[in-house]
Image (cartoon, rainbow, N blue to C red; front, side, top):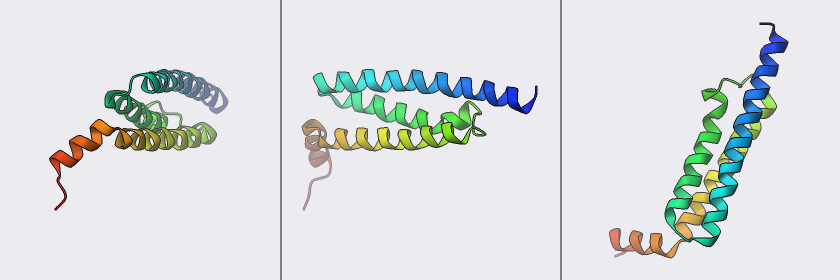
Length: 102
């Protein structure tokens, strides 16, 4: 397979992975808006981590644009999901019960 063909195949895999992960992130983010539970945020954290790791897991690191996009968007999704989970009152209550301040 020539380098150009392998690049095109890598771009196709990258595009497919980004569409699937992006749709899943949007779907679970929409659920999180209506059902305020920590598990929706945990799923978004896992999807963000999958997005960060996808260039290496699916071997499209030679496509620099797709790799940069996957890592940056994955970091943002993960960071916002962690922030949203920490803002949940149930998580805050659990945290303060488990680790009381002195």
